[in-house]
Length: 223
Image 1: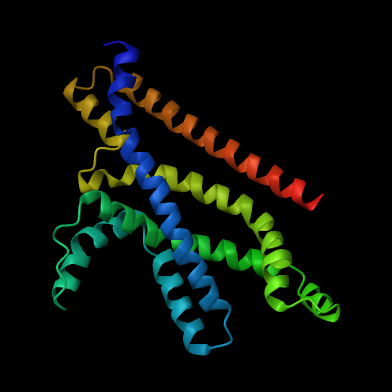
Image 2: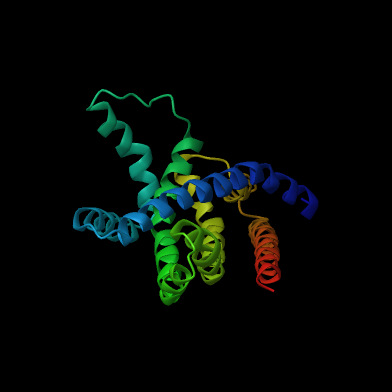
């Protein structure tokens, strides 16, 4: 079996891998921002909810999170009269990854926001800038720049975590490679998994390039 044919089979799982990556990151970011907002509020109840969620999710392995989302959530929701049996495995994959990475992203957002000098808010108020303007035009851009390296690492980690959806029977890059290896009785196993590793590496290179452009964009704005 040629390398081209092997790569062709592996790449059949690329759409699902990218789908999982993009949607999971979007939903995890939205939930992560909400959790950061809860955590930074001067409200014990809100902060407590955020801390419990973050501690629970960060302490749960991603593989277990996927299994809980796929097998546990339908049972829990059915107990209160909500039926989600029509959800696809891809939906559960996105859900499981989103829940897990929301906690990691929330910590990245929180630490970045707290790293911005709070004196800038007082300085902005002293010259009459509204708090909303200060927040969006001064604090958030700086916090974003600080958070970008951590976010980049988390996205790269998410790329690798997409391979865990094989437990749900989803045909992503890893599952396609694994099935091909089994079908060929392991004869081409080494080449198959080397090509799989190279495929993930190319995806990571693209992500690094995207984040490099984002950092350069923010640097240009600051100048």
